[in-house]
Length: 290
Image 1 (cartoon, rainbow, N blue to C red):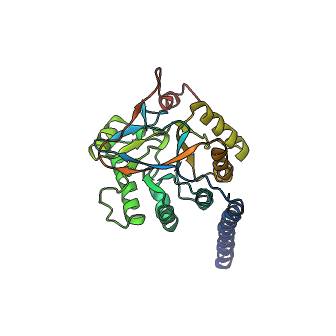
Image 2: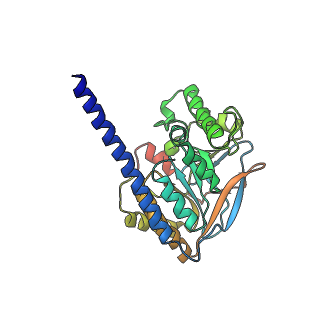
Image 3: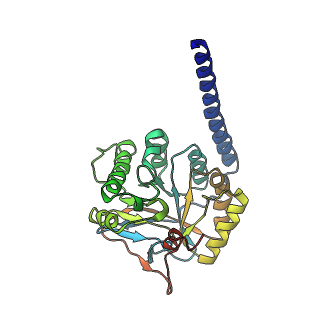
């Protein structure tokens, strides 16, 4: 019996190592493909926008009736849910084009991938919080549990990415709710701590399985219709990592410019939503839209 258990454990360990090696090999091959396709004339980051969060901030037209002041054909790129095995390919694609983005990280993924989380910051990207455990949703938690999850998410970023005590004020006071499902009590608590809440203006819908080509077509159609905006992707999605090099080249081809957001002093400048605005987030949560 002991011999059987040993063999079974050995077989399970071997399969586990093969899975890890397989994921690593996939990431390496994807990175090599990206590097080989680097443009001699990269897109680059057009400008940096300092975003103040004094007194709180609620921005992103999918959820809130205000957004950041972008000019025509300006975009902000952000990625949720990492770091993960697909994050290196995303970072390679961004580096290839000289583009900076914001990564809203899940705390438990930071704890599982500390070196990768630090790499994101070391490559000049903005590292923000997407909670500790990505609860679905904060509206199902008590206020106390919600506060604890958010605080733990910022604490692991402080310790792992910024080398600070976990209880320190976050160097990047940017937060995004999982599913954009905020609550009034948590919003009030975050605002009192001068933490900004970010939605987005366009989403890639990359939580839905699709090919990289289909995703590129969908995102560009939405962007062309809007003309500008803060776009949400997920660096945990292989389809997004595969699409990103072509997406960045398409931005350059169509004369879009990338804006990088970083923490700034005081209150942020925002602009109001167009007339007739409604929250798509609330409609989806209420089950009125897909």
